[in-house]
Image (tube, one colour):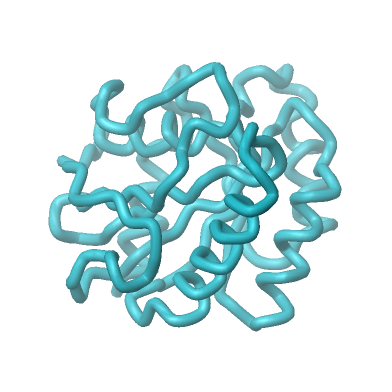
Length: 190
């Protein structure tokens, strides 16, 4: 199976602190605990690179990871749940919008949807915001291994009905679809 080496570069709160690089960049959007950190770790086969947690809202900054000098992944704070003040939430929103709208290196956004649950209101709200600005985006359906094999196609079809663009299944637990996802990202970089 194809694996990429990856290393953590920097954490940034706002656009001016982002790394100076020309590599294609893929920001990860999704609710807290949707599996973004596990996704990063599985792509590089290193369970300790991105910190995972059972407590939602642990990611507070934009965390940048370099994947074999092929592309960067930017792990964004999860939306939907975090024990933070409204003032802090407003600051995050301002900084994240600035990053998403002005960062020239962004090749495509990746929105994560948990296969075990219906698409949530905040998932729809995020997608509407992205589409209002006509930003490139595709979807990764995480935790697909929790769904019986006979029902996986229906889960993916539901996401495809609701969200435009490509929809890819992903399982960090059993590494299904990992190689396909790596190839998909590398093709987008070309």
